[in-house]
Length: 512
Image (tube, rainbow, N blue to C red; front, side, top):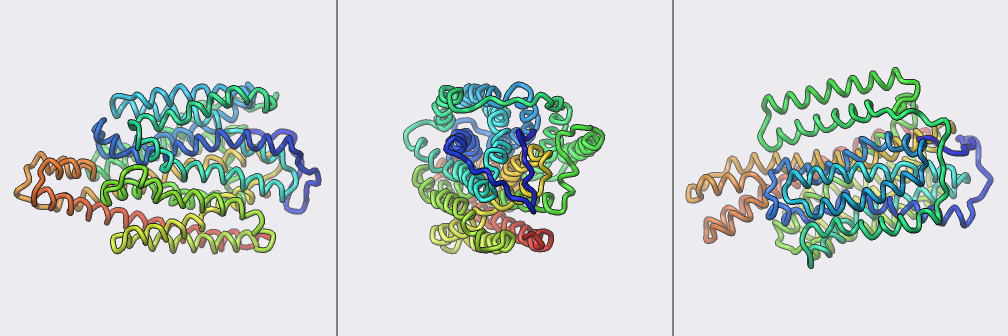
């Protein structure tokens, strides 16, 4: 993506032109698609039990249903940014809105796990057409540093709130409708955007736009999906030749992707930006933060419903504080950094979130009090991270590369969240599988036990069919195995977040 009408706003300069009402209204319009496509990252979390009941997916298919959306957004975001420069950003936004609405309907009425995975993949591509210009537009609409930081805070708040309220909104819908209805929530929003977009958004295209690099986009998607497939296969079935082949394919294609980026005059990902002493570390910190922020809630949603026995709406209410904390923290950040050095605030917040994840690893001792306290801690801790890292990247990026920097920053949110869902979901699934394989219940038939070992949903169904002491023993064992997996996932988040704090302190500590 390319910036429009760039003006130098480097570390030693300040833009003097103040944003007008037009720019702030434009920001509100930009925030609408951001909120919706972020919500689709997590809106399915509370629908997992119903999905498992009606579509009978395997553990691997279930993870693909959840996170294929985020990977397809991240993999095609840069390609769609270039396309927007060529055909017009408003035109691409409206085309994307129409496609998002149509593919949401396809997902809602999917009849098999394979159909739903395909629909979610198409939704990801549509989401990538909606998202590409938002941050680069903010960079050029808000030239004053303080106003730009506030605008980025609003942008981050919409993204974070969308992802955080996804489970709550999904839970409210599931309390009255079938699982597919969660996808239909996006339809009226996108139709509204189709109506008001032409009236409120200006058109922009870059006459010098780079060429569409479809090969690089395909390489990036194949490399990531192959690696994730290998990891998911290990989680479900253990290490074997199929997993090794998938990982090898991902690594080989990834090497070709990097080599191609070095050769191209106008690469899909500007590797020079990643080597920048401030931009690269800031990007890494953001990915690690999003890893935990998005990844842990899938396991929490399943824990609340399948272990604690809550309905979807009640489970959504228990996770609702996350959205409030993210919104408050994101919007308060621009005011706090006027008094506190950004990197110091970043490090303190990351340490707070790591403590929250560590507390969550003890959830089996007092589930609801520990979960509530930990959510407040890690959500408040992570909420300023996106604003701070994004502002650092945009501040230190050369003016002529602002579009590329904004695209990489946007990708880090989607990729970090999808990676967290994939990795942490695999940690929980692998822990559950290993623990359940050790389980010996002679009174339970082999077919029933095999179903229980696949997923927690299968174990709940099997235990209900068995009934009596055998069903209770199976249910208790499954709950204990899943709780241990959740604890290990939370501990992984704590370690990764601490690593992010160390990176921020060591590599960004000199930033004024």
